[in-house]
Image (cartoon, rainbow, N blue to C red; front, top):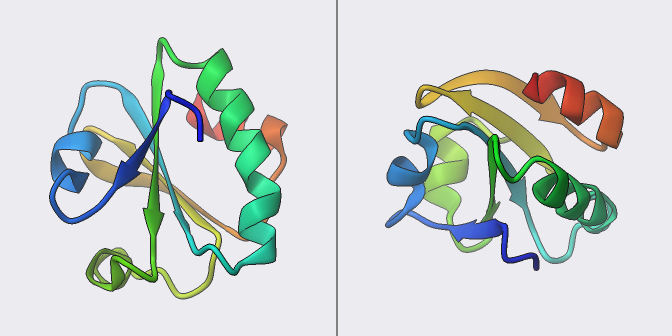
Length: 104
């Protein structure tokens, strides 16, 4: 995983999403094929947008409370936070261009 992508759990999630930056959080699982397919896209975005966007990943197998709290029903689910609030949700695979546009 890229040095620009943070593993998130119950201990660091709130502090991560309440930063001043736009935050993208990928809810995923290691056994999920589409999750593996989107990982390189997130790596590219993390490199290209590192000055303006923070990217984190939540393994739903290890953090079911967070998945439940944010109503993650399918994976991958991407939540985009602005000011600590969910601004957008993407369920399933998405293109790099679509995610970049949603990040603004």
